[in-house]
Length: 414
Image (tube, rainbow, N blue to C red; front, side):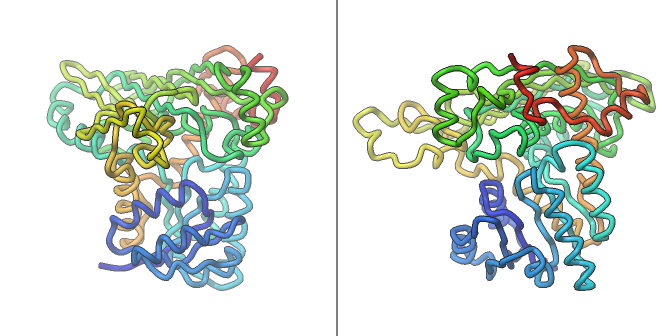
């Protein structure tokens, strides 16, 4: 198997999760990491597990010459700057990278996403947009199982996707000016992608269905209230009294099948106010005479920890991402990196790069997800359905920056 040398830009939560996935994939060597905060802990973790030398580099430029694939996991606010650094390193060193990966979202808005695409073309490498949930085994297995049914009865007419937990780990995720918004930007991009993918007939390109219209609503239902607002300020230094972001969003996207003209709908719901076991992903789909349903909190393993024993539990998240309790009846997921699709998205990207092509989801796909996210923000902001077949609307979206992203969330959420 062709082994590719990977270099990770960014040393936060998502890199840690991706390393857990890489541990389960053959043909990937973790050659280097670079981050604003030195990623020594992650580098040590990778070396201890035999994933590669995992050297810590001072800059992207220093690392680029030693790796085949560059993985961009930086905060959204410096995504374009990171791509500029990669492009400069490639030009200066005459490099020919074999792959370029960017974790979701591609950028905070369409202007930035366009610049990421331009830079990717300058770099000249195949691309992979990392949207892990599309690669979840439960979704891929459901599509494979239903493929003959879909061929006979027709594709799904309705897909529903939800992602909820109690809130992000890092301060920049809470800051709408850095992250690009609130939960709609952070997690809505997952659900928009999942809905689009589930409605798409098997064997078709992930962008086969044409988005027609988007309607959405957002709210600040928990973290704008006392005492939660004060908790945010004390823990992360983020003031939701001054610059709030949404902690709840829901909406609907309508798609048209270009071959048949049939319409289908994808509903999404996301929140940072789910105070139960931890991260929950819900997906279901309804077709003519058939259906599918998945819930990530359904596990073959349950653990109960009573009050007397709770003091011995050091880390609630050892059981489940974003878990908020370390006692009672807890859902346990033994392999979250695999459950959520991280392992299979790594396999897909590796196989694509070895073959000299882009992954199932490339940067152009990531750009289209940013467009849908911006359309959802515009719909919520203006209280109307956004028509994606209207040239004037598309022109507006090209330069649109949501008020929440501008730090003017009070005008939308109050």
